[in-house]
Image 1: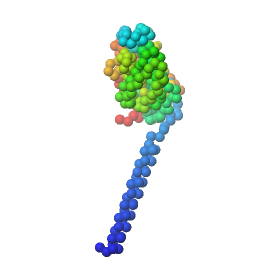
Image 2: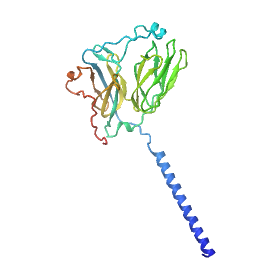
Image 3: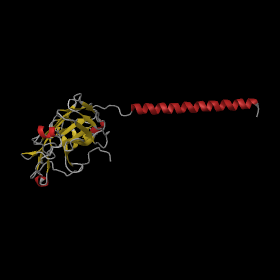
Image 4: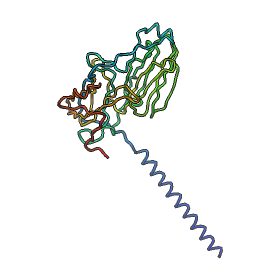
Length: 291
């Protein structure tokens, strides 16, 4: 092989390596740009409506059980009538039920979950007062602040046990600063306990959208600003290993108000009436929904 041939081969090899490196760099740049452009923020700007309803309890509700809090004298003194809160019924209406839009499409056929909703700047508050959590059930948006306070003259220990979000465990003595946390992944629902007072329980429903509510003492709930469309609305009640959830389908008209009622309890099935029928933990197929 002549010297000229060797030089020529070296030049060809060098140009080939340069071209290959340029191609890899371009491919990498294209991948990065694609990743940066993926998932743009899509804001809903169409017509909206309201979803309201009442959660009832059919039949005789189980009696609340008195909680023995004597292990902490402060708790026993501050809240001597402490009782369980898993089924709170008044005049046949059920409180502490987490109601939310589980799935569905807007009037123009887009999935409601594909839109992005900014979390409120106001934090959701959870207090420890009388050695129990107030409120017992709360809803919060992803990345919205959860503000936790201790109003008791004793130490508490806040310990959420999520399946999708990171678990954390933090003590909060009396007079300690407010604890602020956020959840980044939607999850229904996250149990919260206190390691120092095992009877203390709360539940946090974390949603990507703002379309959720907790039934009040009279069983009522309201969700506003819901895009016009067809949805599966779910109602979750505490009880058992993972709670009990029921779903119903509802159509929300532009500037309209849709009503959807739920009923729990052994006699709930016998109380179904005309119109929207109660469906036991069944998710309806949505128009335009991928399979």
